[in-house]
Image 1 (cartoon, rainbow, N blue to C red):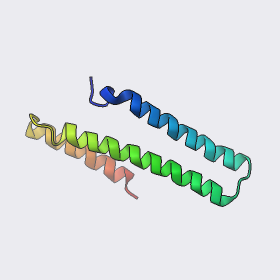
Image 2: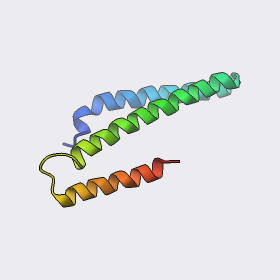
Image 3: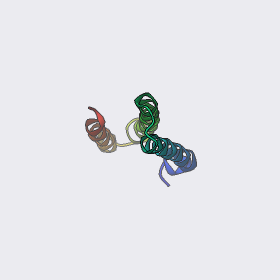
Image 4: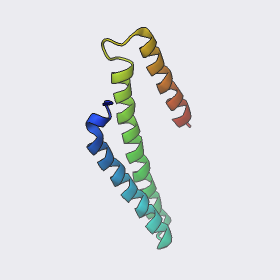
Length: 91
């Protein structure tokens, strides 16, 4: 079992909240809400996704880079995986 599987339900709950926030953005656009409302909803989505990303990055660091007992090769692989994600994510 992966380390994420041990916390699967809380992560799924966060994703479902994010999906609800995205649906709220869609409703705002469909209902022609003012731009301030739409921007607030988009900012909430971004914050929620960023928070989830940060949590999973921290888990990855703990489990695949800093975890006692990992070989140097496993640490290097974990670090490279993280660098690849950060490069894709960073603006």
